[in-house]
Length: 401
Image (cartoon, rainbow, N blue to C red; front, top):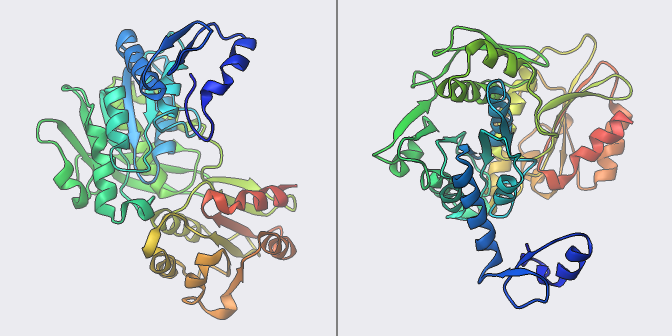
């Protein structure tokens, strides 16, 4: 499939055939066996759409500013208890990655869980029309990509594009957030989640590396092997999808208790000296940063240990970035947090809001890494949170080695 990106994929056709390709799509005449099309990307998407229609695989579509990958993983785990289930691999969730996922699903797939991401208005509309989901789910409307959309309302409009291809007999699952109301369809079954809504968490018990919860629609108490009360919501959504598709409640409980999440999501790790590391370094926005700080601060300290936090820039927030970074100060409780390490140009705005003796500020990753290595003690707990491009994952690796 010779797609055009930084380079034109047509220049690699000879190489592809040398490596065993038998035919190709092409937008121009080539000597190899080919199917001539006007637009290879559009043809790629239509091929994926046709394949889904031909196989009659039922689609569960997931989007949202936070939690979509974790929720996707949990839904796949739950549905796998009863069905042959495939899911988006990694972050293959855009106009190229989603068709790629569809065309790589095993022949015996019965359900597919597709994550849908966006960079601009209309992206998710397109993906939904390709996938034609039976169930469409929006996890949360946050500040991701605020730089490109300008307001949360525009983000909501983009995310609600997931309704565009929803089957007439389908169901739309959305948060109880008034910002989405104007974008909701009037001819579709809608389930809202949140306190006292259609579905909600009724009890939550948090531990360091797991949490247990009950809901208003399940009899069983569920336990998941990941921290963060926000993950209880993600797991609740997965459980609800399971009930819609007739997965037994006991099997839902089993699936969630053994769920394996995509790498670099929220997880506890051990430093080489024994210190506890809560790594959440894949992406960051203000909502996600506040939630993980709340989770981290709620946990008891280790005996004789400290709570330390590394926060790095949250990117793609546009003109609102300074104020949104400064606003994180309200989420930091120094009665529970011993010291905060800030990294990146934008974190200077948060630095200005914090007590000088409780914060260290860095613009160089190596200097930050060295400072953490020099201070981290075996009894300490360390949280790291920032956008993926800030490379906090390298600090985690250094501390583990």
